[in-house]
Image (cartoon, rainbow, N blue to C red; front, side, top):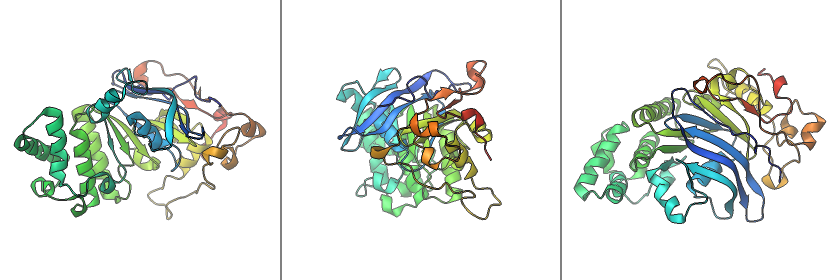
Length: 348
């Protein structure tokens, strides 16, 4: 198996943030048949910081987050690499350590809260059950604490919503309930998997503003996963771009948007709708990501890439530094790209 990202991490050292909280190093996730669906992915998230993980559906974003949680679907397993959370490698840890980390150290906000929430249990009860187990609170104290959590996530009429079932809430209210549920364990890291999918633009902004406020108030780190570069660019100072199970570019968001160093990132940037655009996709990206079982021998993006040369079909480009190095750590993340011709990529 090739190892295009073994040398460099998609590392983020965000301004004003502390040490690394999450470090994923050379993570490989394979099917039971030995087919890699996540291929040597490396990234870091600083304590109290926000990192965006972006790519098309099927790029491996959600599977990467599930590997961090140790909740990979049946038929998939992490075979290589490390997932260090606060210095503890969860992949190598005992099952009891992994289970203890979920909710208390790392929690997930799922893409579809209606399917993630228990349809037979009232919202308030779902939250207070976590508080009773974690803090040993009485039922009455846990109910009061759950209500306070709903207030913190700006749930309208929290007393009434606490008594509602998930299907009785709107999409935005269910997402707020999901965020409250995730915060109940007081985690240091939140994995947000497409948290604004299927919400209208106004509700999307409210949810993103809420996450940004909670990140500041709780000093919780966010790994924000999305296929929508427009949405993610507003809240994540640094980005990691995935394609076909691999990291293809990373660095400060502003730099990636202004001057992408991988043709795939450039295509995503071109597809960010202008407020005056008449179509949702100004320049649609033709084709689809390859099947993991039939990944090309060279660059996986080569069949869709307008810049592809013969070397691209034969040699898998390593993830390497591009551009000048940052001066000191507060200056930002190092630019990395997995493209043979990274220096020649243009946005237009």
